[in-house]
Length: 213
Image (cartoon, rainbow, N blue to C red; front, side, top):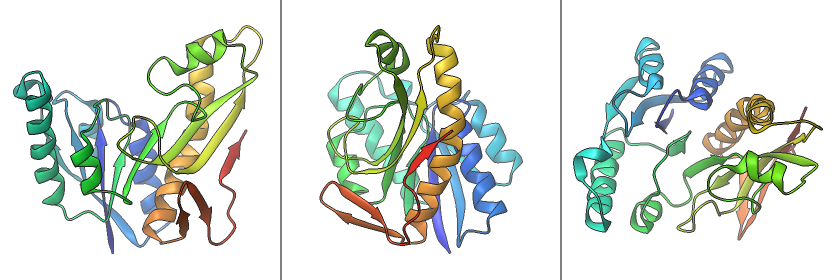
């Protein structure tokens, strides 16, 4: 039985989708813990109510600066490792992780980003896509590397940008596909169904890695 640890900072709607898919689809895995950097993260209540262990590593307790960031990541890794994860999943975890942390979980650390990477890394992705005149937008699941919002692409979801769209409407359209795509990507990881060669990630069974409406 593979073990999954999910990191969140807020509601964790993608975490919820993964928990439900893992149980409903009877993966050979379990979500062992949900960890947050915010003690008030709503997703912690959902996890506890579903019998999943929770933990908080409050980044504010470590202060600011590079030394504080490194100390936070060290404590975060200690907590994560206490659950012996096979896969670590970032699901709306709003912290930039140090290269040392990323290297510790290299090859088993997944993130979801609300744009079609490599376009629009960072924040305010939906506003930027609309302002740029994009006709499509979406989200990307990728393996995490030391470079922010980069790394081998596991799956992408694409939605149209409609005339009159605002960032909120576009975000909701994308989120619906995220809730399908991210559980699939995590399942592929825990079931060993991905072949990774450099930046190329291929599903060994031929499942579609592009999600659309």
